Length: 434
Image 1 (spheres, one colour):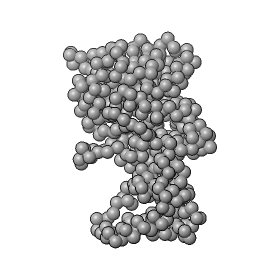
Image 2 (cartoon, one colour):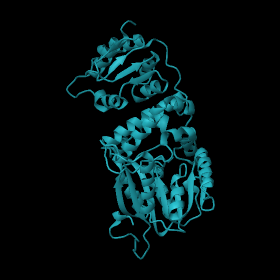
Image 3 (cartoon, one colour):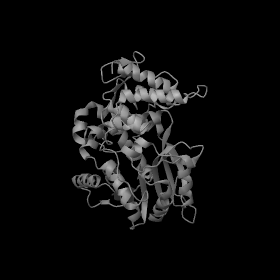
Image 4 (tube, helix red, strand yellow):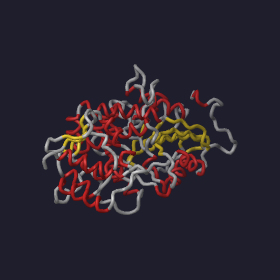
């Protein structure tokens, strides 16, 4: 095992046909790779066994969650170097011959050891059965992501307890979101933007689909005088939101329910917000989602659909969810191109009146959440467990880069259930949002 790092780097570079862009420190203390580059620390040979038995992103994810792999130095720089093209063999570089591949396999097996890998970390989703996006399976998926401890989310999200992108004043993907704008100020600005786009007025009924910890309904009731219903499938979120509502003295105007959007039947509502929830719906169920919200909205009412979007694929039938995200972060979550979202909303009867991209805003938000995690990693590990804290740090940092590099986006779509008269109720210059 002497100089395990050099042997590992040599084997990986032969397999890739390109130099490895990071430095490697192995379990024996040896190092190899470009000096000054971010360092991938392989703490245990088990990490290699995981990769041999499950090549690709899922094997890497299991080793990361288990603490067998780590990154020393700038996490964002390391992820940038390890993303995409480094794992794609150049078209002009021939693939290794069978004999070479067998030799590489033997080298890696000698480094990894002959034993099979341990079971996947307990944070990985297991036992998914039945059709995707049934009521029961959706409840379990939501619980996996959101019922990990309100104190943990308070550490990550800060006092606003808003788990969607903030709305920053100035800055951009390479800025800081405005020199005087805190995360809490930017989240309040986003909540207010949603309320203004929905044209909320005193006495209106607002439905918040996927209400989280209650931040939007609290803001809407307190600042705009609405009566609000918030629905979530997370019992921990509902408990926290009800406590906040009671402490604010707004229990007579806000109702927090543990309820699936498909079970809401007390419309019509004057306005509906769906912020960061539609990613859980699934492509096969999206039309039903749109139909349900259309039915719950009064004629003339507005829908604000805030949703992460992926880029269109050349072959949409071949689209697959990210294996790390599906196994550890958002089980059964699915992203759709924004054009498909708009089309389905219109097919359900909505008139889409405005679309605003907030892509750079989400990148800035995620970097603030990662900074919150990194500011007190020991507390994060105590609150959610070491593996879960590692999942969230990797997922949020990688997501920040994905938004910055335009690999994914996030959009607010404002739609109206336009009445037969054709009067949408929107001002001619909608971006004033008065």
